[in-house]
Image (tube, rainbow, N blue to C red; front, side):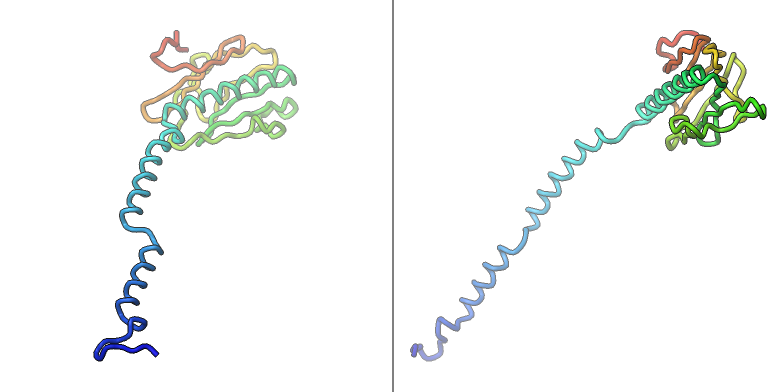
Length: 189
């Protein structure tokens, strides 16, 4: 049996031993505030470098949507020629749609047989500006017609976000292009 000096406890039961054991165990179970702040700083710097590459600015969104409209109008013009029917582009309250002419009823109806020509919504903040066909304004109920003959009346559609704008323009022989006003675009209709 261990003997101890009077007034002192045995080393096996000392408070000092328990205290050291408890402190060393606490320091290995978590992260210090400094370590966590370094991790957050590295994460924040990485995020600030990566984020601009994923976010599109207004000009990029405008260019992308204008190019989409060019492609859709070209596709619709080709479809009108290949199917031998009249198609048309028409603005809506928040976007645009394509219509086909029902010759039997003498009316324009939304295209439902072609998923590519479905009704489209414009991106947030974008709106259609002035549109015209043969220098006549196209209102919300008017159409830009695409003939089955492949000869189309010249048209112009403006897309806007804030101060930025792009113009989608088509000519008599069915060529459709996107132009940036003020950057060598030639005469406007």
